[in-house]
Amino acid sequence: MLRLVALFIAIFFLPSIASAAWQPELRIGLSSTASTFSIQCSLPAVLSDASNDQPIGMLGKDKPIAITINENKISVNGIMLNTAAIDIRPRVDSQLGEMITAVGDQKLSGGVRLVLSEGHFVLINLTTVEQYLRGVVPSEMPAGWHVEALKAQTIAARTFAMQNRKRHEAAGFDVCTTVHCQVFKGAEGAHENADKAIADTAGEVMVFKGALINAMFHTDSGGMTESTANVWGGDLPYLQSVEDYEMKTQPWEVKMTSDEFASKLNAASKGVGSVKSIKLSALEIGKGAGDRTPSGRVREITIVGSDREIKLSGEDMRSILGLPSTLFEVAINGGAIEISGYGRGHGVGMSQYGAKGFAERGKSYKEILNHYYKGIELKKIY
Image 1 (tube, rainbow, N blue to C red):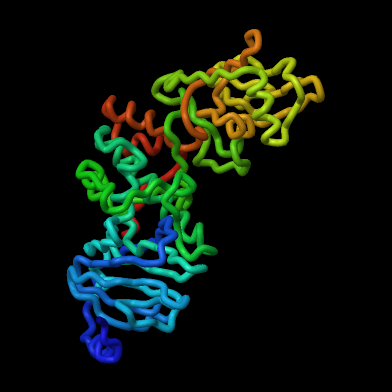
Image 2 (cartoon, rainbow, N blue to C red):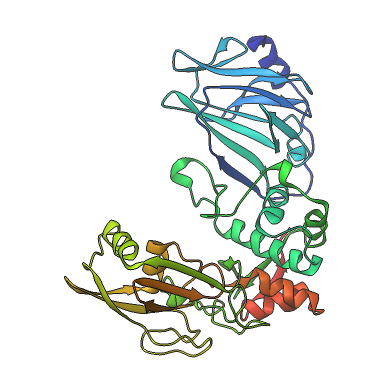
């Protein structure tokens, strides 16, 4: 059991310790509905009040503690604390990237923050950017791919993380663990190949005119990437449409009956009645039309029904039907709707399969990044 007064004195009078070279930290929001945790750290750690950074107690190396909610208060080994949020960090702050914190069966690099929220804990991983990348890079790109592709992915992921810090500030953290930000699987998701790519590019990011870029990436372009202006609006000079190393990659096909198609439209409040016809020009990758962007992706599709005629954006169509991309064409055969296309993802920024292809053909990570992000510079910021 923690002896709070004695431990506070012990911490308060600890000698100061010089910190290592600066490295940015991230707060990663982890999904949790738990009201109790068993926590154990691989290094001596400090438990502190997250609201004012005041130390509360010490945690010994590999000594588990029980943190629970008791009478709507945080309780540590049975002692209730007068705070709604606690931090657990290494005693030597510069060792944040070296510590492993076991939260139940989950292993996390760095420390944690526990925030009391409506009868459960919000769990936040406190870690360095480089340690964060160890849980991201092999989750976003297969670790068996060419190391130059992994390096390109690493720099894109690092740049994205740095540029999107405080994306979830309203919830008390920087980034989440899903595709909304970047897929993150913690220390257990690390892989030696990705670790090498991370170490070889440590601190390296992409900038445009001195500012971090929004380093978007996707699974596969299908042959040509898309400009951000044609997906989300806002013309970013470094996110323009470029040709990939190979056309018509990742082909896919989706089939459904006309009734199923109509039902999906109804569910999205886009009902037209019975589907009579669909108007969309033929797909030619790298060739635009009135209803297609210059890359060939669907800009707008017209659906004629028994009740009304509507126009949908390609992104709306992709969302409503769960399509892999907006690089598609549509045909009606009898009572069936047949949709076929190429690529996967929004198409903006780096194509991961494209990066793989370029790397296998001898291109360096710098060449790969300069192909997909126009006019950028690579800069080591720490």
